[in-house]
Amino acid sequence: MLTGLTVRERTEADIAACVEALRGVYAADRYPMRWPADAAAFVTARDVLAAWVARREGAVVGHVVLRSGAGHDDAAMWSAATGLPDSGHGLIARLFVVPEERGTGLGRQLLDIAVAESWHRALWPVLDVMAANTAAVALYERLGWRRVGGREFPFSDGSTAPMYCYVAPPDPSLR
Image (tube, rainbow, N blue to C red; front, side, top):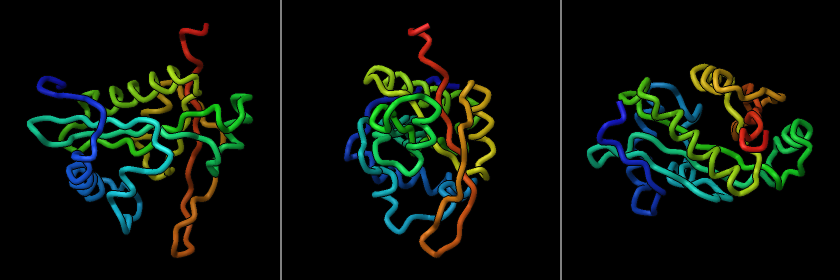
């Protein structure tokens, strides 16, 4: 249920609440797979083009970021699939919804906002997701995202975990 929900651009004042929301997501789902040493830096990411939060009753209940895909480790896979240089991609990242809001359509709403902004910037939306995050994988595939490859994601302790790389379906306005 999306009643009473506000989605808006993220501000610096939202970061602490985003970290708290992420703690709940991590406890429920192990997203991210390893708790970051600097959770605020994880949420804010780098190369951010835009970011949004969803709030209900003053609490952050969802979050998503649009980043530049330029120079990303997965850029070659995305470029092979889209025919664009790595600078032609908008990387959707840090998409999370607190457990209490699951099943309401909020995850899709946040994804749709980031996708629309990516197309608005003439960037093909792309993303990567850990294979273990099966709910996210199912969402992306249900929405027509195409898996274009995968790789082992390296953690700082030397261990790895499988991840998948996706490209969004073509912009419907271009058909």
